[in-house]
Length: 169
Length: 185
Image 1 (cartoon, rainbow over the protein chains, first blue to last red):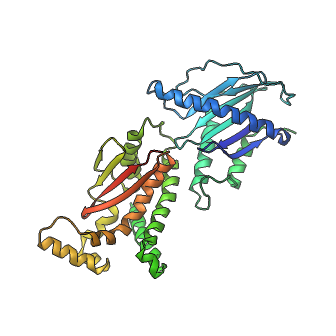
Image 2 (cartoon, rainbow over the protein chains, first blue to last red):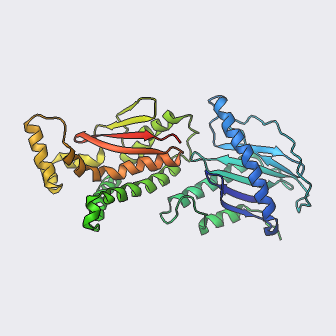
Image 3 (cartoon, one colour):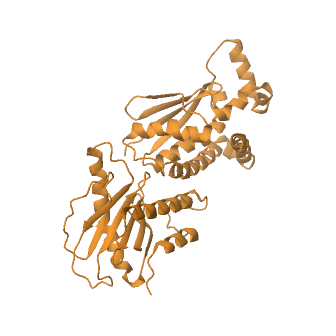
């Protein structure tokens, strides 16, 4: 159950960010922005690593005091987590939040912040969520009325994201 | 199957449509060709997004060019590029010996008549004089049928992060060469 989903363009500006609850949006903007650095690090590190690491899914990024950010390593190698001190913000989520990353071949990044309080979301579920996101993004891209680089306003995309978000009353 | 013929017919209509709706000045200064190329660009971007959804990440530029030559070309034209050459310094030449969009044109003389009249006459002269090269004027006439495909390649590369300039050249129908110049920024 995702708490925040962001689609970030090649030039590192957001094409689409949505989070629940709406008041905490700024904080999520910040966390997604900081995770971009780790995404770039992962992607550039892959160039020097083995040829096997060619998947699109990245993984758990890094755990922090408040949040755990997931960045999937291309071939499943676990990443040594760095502890990053972020000023402790009073969070609605007493439990840890995991952040996941995914980079497409066209250098568009998807970052997902997930609340893993109730159920520990398995790897495969995260992968399938990213798969659905990628499929919807491809549909948006093929829409002739959409100019690449604009913010995404598609209703179908919104509906798909809503179906993945957690229900908070 | 049937979709191949559909795309061919649509492409030809597209070229005639753009030229019909253009003003006189536009035909002369090449704006029509730019329009066709830009259409190809946008289509290329969308197509690449769809085709690379499930493929692994690309290692380097050459890997990307090979993908364009094999998978991309196969999906669109049902065949691969016949020859890829490079000087390893950012220039790639893709040669297609039987370019689908041109096969119908060289197959029969009646199509040559509908193409600009000059094209037919020049071809006859060339064959008579056993000249292999088609001169520049004839090149221009064929350009409009290649502009969309040039745009396709440029759009696909741009979405994969490569800025390029793509030009096309026909030496002997229906073979044609696409030259890709990668711009390092």
